[in-house]
Image (cartoon, rainbow, N blue to C red; front, side, top):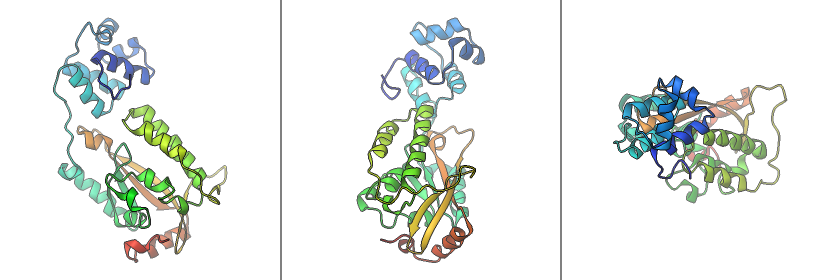
Amino acid sequence: MTLAQEAPVGDMVRQWRGRRRRSQLDVAVAANLSARHLSFIETGRSRPSPDMIERLCEELDVPLRDRNRIHLAAGFAPAHSERPLADLGEAGTAVDALLAGQEPYPAMAVNVRWELLAGNRSALAAFGDVSPVLLEPPVNVLRSTLHPDGLAHRLGNYTQWRSHVVRRVRRQLDRTAAPGLAELLAEIQSYPIPLGKDAVLGEPGDPIIPMLLHTDLGPLRLLYTLTVFGAARDVTMDEIAVESFFPADAPSRQLLQRLAGDEPSAAVVP
Protein backbone atom coordinates (compact mmCIF):
# COMPACT_ATOMS: atom_id res chain seq x y z
CA MET A 1 0.00 0.00 0.00
CA THR A 2 1.38 3.42 -0.97
CA LEU A 3 1.13 6.57 1.06
CA ALA A 4 -1.17 8.09 -1.55
CA GLN A 5 -3.80 5.35 -1.12
CA GLU A 6 -6.51 5.34 1.51
CA ALA A 7 -5.23 3.68 4.68
CA PRO A 8 -6.03 3.62 8.39
CA VAL A 9 -4.52 6.51 10.29
CA GLY A 10 -2.22 4.16 12.23
CA ASP A 11 -0.83 2.69 9.03
CA MET A 12 -0.10 6.18 7.70
CA VAL A 13 1.76 7.19 10.84
CA ARG A 14 3.75 3.95 10.82
CA GLN A 15 4.63 4.35 7.13
CA TRP A 16 5.95 7.88 7.68
CA ARG A 17 7.90 6.76 10.73
CA GLY A 18 9.44 4.00 8.62
CA ARG A 19 10.20 6.44 5.82
CA ARG A 20 12.07 8.63 8.31
CA ARG A 21 13.83 5.58 9.75
CA ARG A 22 12.78 6.42 13.30
CA SER A 23 11.96 4.04 16.14
CA GLN A 24 8.69 4.20 18.08
CA LEU A 25 10.55 5.17 21.22
CA ASP A 26 12.48 7.94 19.49
CA VAL A 27 9.36 9.48 17.95
CA ALA A 28 7.29 9.06 21.10
CA VAL A 29 9.84 10.84 23.29
CA ALA A 30 10.26 13.67 20.79
CA ALA A 31 6.48 14.11 20.41
CA ASN A 32 5.94 13.99 24.21
CA LEU A 33 3.89 10.81 24.44
CA SER A 34 4.60 7.27 25.60
CA ALA A 35 5.85 4.57 23.26
CA ARG A 36 2.81 2.54 24.35
CA HIS A 37 0.46 5.31 23.23
CA LEU A 38 2.20 5.58 19.86
CA SER A 39 2.01 1.80 19.47
CA PHE A 40 -1.73 1.95 20.14
CA ILE A 41 -2.13 4.67 17.49
CA GLU A 42 -0.19 2.69 14.89
CA THR A 43 -2.13 -0.52 15.55
CA GLY A 44 -5.52 1.23 15.53
CA ARG A 45 -6.27 0.71 19.21
CA SER A 46 -6.25 4.45 19.84
CA ARG A 47 -7.40 7.32 17.62
CA PRO A 48 -5.13 10.37 17.78
CA SER A 49 -6.60 13.83 18.33
CA PRO A 50 -5.98 16.57 15.75
CA ASP A 51 -3.35 18.05 18.07
CA MET A 52 -1.63 14.69 18.41
CA ILE A 53 -1.64 14.23 14.63
CA GLU A 54 0.07 17.58 14.18
CA ARG A 55 2.66 16.80 16.87
CA LEU A 56 3.54 13.50 15.23
CA CYS A 57 3.57 15.01 11.74
CA GLU A 58 5.82 17.84 12.86
CA GLU A 59 8.25 15.36 14.34
CA LEU A 60 8.16 13.18 11.21
CA ASP A 61 8.33 16.15 8.82
CA VAL A 62 5.18 15.01 6.99
CA PRO A 63 4.21 17.28 4.06
CA LEU A 64 0.99 19.23 4.61
CA ARG A 65 -0.87 17.41 1.84
CA ASP A 66 -0.27 14.08 3.60
CA ARG A 67 -1.10 15.60 6.97
CA ASN A 68 -4.53 16.38 5.58
CA ARG A 69 -4.89 12.74 4.52
CA ILE A 70 -4.01 11.61 8.03
CA HIS A 71 -6.57 13.98 9.54
CA LEU A 72 -9.22 12.64 7.16
CA ALA A 73 -8.29 9.04 7.96
CA ALA A 74 -8.76 9.84 11.64
CA GLY A 75 -12.22 11.25 10.95
CA PHE A 76 -11.34 14.95 11.13
CA ALA A 77 -11.50 17.78 8.62
CA PRO A 78 -8.27 18.69 6.79
CA ALA A 79 -6.17 20.99 8.93
CA HIS A 80 -4.41 22.84 6.13
CA SER A 81 -5.88 24.89 3.31
CA GLU A 82 -4.88 24.60 -0.34
CA ARG A 83 -5.35 27.78 -2.33
CA PRO A 84 -4.17 28.82 -5.81
CA LEU A 85 -0.99 30.86 -5.96
CA ALA A 86 -3.02 33.93 -6.96
CA ASP A 87 -5.05 33.70 -3.73
CA LEU A 88 -2.12 33.55 -1.30
CA GLY A 89 -1.91 37.27 -0.62
CA GLU A 90 1.50 38.56 0.43
CA ALA A 91 3.03 35.09 0.06
CA GLY A 92 2.02 35.10 -3.61
CA THR A 93 3.35 38.64 -3.92
CA ALA A 94 6.67 37.39 -2.54
CA VAL A 95 6.82 34.76 -5.30
CA ASP A 96 6.16 37.46 -7.92
CA ALA A 97 8.92 39.59 -6.41
CA LEU A 98 11.40 36.71 -6.54
CA LEU A 99 10.60 36.05 -10.20
CA ALA A 100 10.70 39.70 -11.25
CA GLY A 101 13.83 40.43 -9.24
CA GLN A 102 15.71 37.64 -10.99
CA GLU A 103 15.51 39.30 -14.43
CA PRO A 104 17.37 39.16 -16.76
CA TYR A 105 18.16 35.70 -15.40
CA PRO A 106 15.53 32.93 -15.61
CA ALA A 107 13.39 31.94 -12.63
CA MET A 108 10.38 29.62 -12.27
CA ALA A 109 7.95 28.70 -9.52
CA VAL A 110 7.09 24.99 -9.52
CA ASN A 111 5.17 22.63 -7.26
CA VAL A 112 6.34 19.33 -5.82
CA ARG A 113 5.41 17.54 -9.08
CA TRP A 114 7.52 20.02 -11.09
CA GLU A 115 4.47 21.61 -12.65
CA LEU A 116 5.06 25.21 -13.71
CA LEU A 117 3.08 27.70 -11.61
CA ALA A 118 4.70 30.90 -12.81
CA GLY A 119 7.84 32.06 -14.57
CA ASN A 120 9.54 35.31 -15.43
CA ARG A 121 10.07 36.50 -18.98
CA SER A 122 13.55 35.00 -19.30
CA ALA A 123 12.41 31.56 -18.12
CA LEU A 124 9.35 31.40 -20.37
CA ALA A 125 11.48 32.45 -23.35
CA ALA A 126 13.61 29.34 -22.96
CA PHE A 127 10.63 27.14 -23.89
CA GLY A 128 10.14 28.92 -27.21
CA ASP A 129 10.76 25.88 -29.40
CA VAL A 130 9.38 23.15 -27.14
CA SER A 131 6.65 21.04 -28.73
CA PRO A 132 3.19 22.56 -28.12
CA VAL A 133 2.06 19.19 -26.75
CA LEU A 134 4.53 19.54 -23.87
CA LEU A 135 3.30 23.06 -23.17
CA GLU A 136 -0.30 22.06 -22.54
CA PRO A 137 -1.23 22.76 -18.90
CA PRO A 138 -0.06 21.63 -16.49
CA VAL A 139 3.40 22.16 -17.97
CA ASN A 140 5.97 19.88 -16.35
CA VAL A 141 9.34 21.64 -16.27
CA LEU A 142 11.47 18.48 -16.14
CA ARG A 143 9.53 16.83 -18.97
CA SER A 144 9.77 19.95 -21.12
CA THR A 145 13.51 20.14 -20.49
CA LEU A 146 14.53 16.49 -20.99
CA HIS A 147 11.92 15.07 -23.37
CA PRO A 148 13.11 14.48 -26.98
CA ASP A 149 10.49 16.99 -28.15
CA GLY A 150 11.52 19.46 -25.48
CA LEU A 151 14.90 21.05 -24.88
CA ALA A 152 16.85 17.80 -25.05
CA HIS A 153 18.51 18.83 -28.32
CA ARG A 154 19.60 22.08 -26.67
CA LEU A 155 21.34 20.47 -23.69
CA GLY A 156 25.03 20.02 -24.47
CA ASN A 157 25.61 17.92 -21.32
CA TYR A 158 22.31 16.03 -21.49
CA THR A 159 23.59 12.79 -19.92
CA GLN A 160 25.30 14.60 -17.07
CA TRP A 161 22.33 16.88 -16.40
CA ARG A 162 19.76 14.09 -16.57
CA SER A 163 21.79 12.07 -14.05
CA HIS A 164 21.73 15.06 -11.72
CA VAL A 165 17.96 15.49 -12.17
CA VAL A 166 17.32 11.78 -11.53
CA ARG A 167 19.25 11.91 -8.24
CA ARG A 168 17.39 15.04 -7.25
CA VAL A 169 13.94 13.58 -7.95
CA ARG A 170 14.86 10.37 -6.10
CA ARG A 171 15.73 12.36 -2.99
CA GLN A 172 12.55 14.38 -3.34
CA LEU A 173 10.45 11.22 -3.71
CA ASP A 174 12.05 9.72 -0.61
CA ARG A 175 11.33 12.85 1.40
CA THR A 176 7.80 13.65 0.20
CA ALA A 177 6.30 10.45 -1.31
CA ALA A 178 4.41 12.88 -3.58
CA PRO A 179 1.94 11.20 -5.97
CA GLY A 180 3.20 11.19 -9.56
CA LEU A 181 6.89 11.61 -8.74
CA ALA A 182 7.72 7.91 -9.12
CA GLU A 183 6.05 7.87 -12.55
CA LEU A 184 7.85 11.08 -13.58
CA LEU A 185 11.17 9.60 -12.46
CA ALA A 186 10.62 6.43 -14.51
CA GLU A 187 9.61 8.50 -17.53
CA ILE A 188 12.73 10.69 -17.37
CA GLN A 189 14.97 7.64 -17.10
CA SER A 190 13.34 6.16 -20.22
CA TYR A 191 14.20 9.09 -22.50
CA PRO A 192 16.81 8.34 -25.17
CA ILE A 193 20.07 10.26 -25.01
CA PRO A 194 20.44 12.61 -28.01
CA LEU A 195 23.52 12.01 -30.15
CA GLY A 196 26.43 14.27 -29.34
CA LYS A 197 24.91 15.52 -26.09
CA ASP A 198 27.11 13.59 -23.67
CA ALA A 199 29.60 16.34 -22.82
CA VAL A 200 30.81 16.41 -19.21
CA LEU A 201 31.23 19.89 -17.79
CA GLY A 202 33.40 20.93 -14.91
CA GLU A 203 36.41 19.54 -13.15
CA PRO A 204 36.40 17.24 -10.08
CA GLY A 205 37.20 20.20 -7.83
CA ASP A 206 34.47 22.48 -9.19
CA PRO A 207 31.76 23.29 -6.60
CA ILE A 208 28.73 23.02 -8.93
CA ILE A 209 27.80 21.25 -12.18
CA PRO A 210 26.41 23.77 -14.70
CA MET A 211 23.71 23.14 -17.29
CA LEU A 212 24.88 23.80 -20.86
CA LEU A 213 22.13 25.20 -23.07
CA HIS A 214 22.82 25.99 -26.72
CA THR A 215 21.05 29.13 -27.99
CA ASP A 216 21.12 30.86 -31.35
CA LEU A 217 23.55 33.40 -29.87
CA GLY A 218 25.93 30.88 -28.36
CA PRO A 219 26.38 28.46 -25.46
CA LEU A 220 24.80 29.33 -22.15
CA ARG A 221 26.11 27.79 -18.91
CA LEU A 222 23.76 28.07 -15.95
CA LEU A 223 23.82 27.39 -12.21
CA TYR A 224 20.65 27.28 -10.12
CA THR A 225 19.45 27.91 -6.59
CA LEU A 226 16.22 26.80 -4.94
CA THR A 227 14.06 28.97 -2.67
CA VAL A 228 11.35 27.47 -0.46
CA PHE A 229 9.09 29.11 2.11
CA GLY A 230 9.54 28.44 5.79
CA ALA A 231 6.71 27.82 8.26
CA ALA A 232 4.17 27.08 5.52
CA ARG A 233 0.60 26.41 6.68
CA ASP A 234 -0.99 26.15 3.23
CA VAL A 235 -0.46 23.09 1.01
CA THR A 236 0.43 25.22 -2.02
CA MET A 237 3.06 27.16 -0.09
CA ASP A 238 4.41 23.95 1.43
CA GLU A 239 4.96 22.48 -2.03
CA ILE A 240 6.14 25.52 -3.96
CA ALA A 241 9.77 26.19 -4.84
CA VAL A 242 11.32 29.00 -6.86
CA GLU A 243 14.18 27.83 -9.05
CA SER A 244 16.50 30.69 -9.99
CA PHE A 245 19.21 30.37 -12.63
CA PHE A 246 22.47 32.31 -12.72
CA PRO A 247 25.27 32.54 -15.30
CA ALA A 248 28.14 30.15 -14.62
CA ASP A 249 30.70 32.35 -16.37
CA ALA A 250 31.18 35.85 -17.74
CA PRO A 251 30.23 35.00 -21.38
CA SER A 252 26.97 33.47 -20.14
CA ARG A 253 26.24 36.61 -18.10
CA GLN A 254 26.73 38.76 -21.19
CA LEU A 255 24.61 36.39 -23.27
CA LEU A 256 21.71 36.50 -20.81
CA GLN A 257 21.80 40.29 -20.93
CA ARG A 258 21.68 40.18 -24.74
CA LEU A 259 18.85 37.67 -24.75
CA ALA A 260 16.88 39.86 -22.37
CA GLY A 261 16.74 42.55 -25.05
CA ASP A 262 15.11 40.21 -27.59
CA GLU A 263 11.53 39.12 -27.94
CA PRO A 264 10.79 36.02 -25.80
CA SER A 265 10.33 33.76 -28.85
CA ALA A 266 13.82 34.66 -30.09
CA ALA A 267 15.68 33.58 -26.99
CA VAL A 268 15.95 29.94 -28.00
CA VAL A 269 15.25 29.12 -31.64
CA PRO A 270 15.43 26.00 -33.81
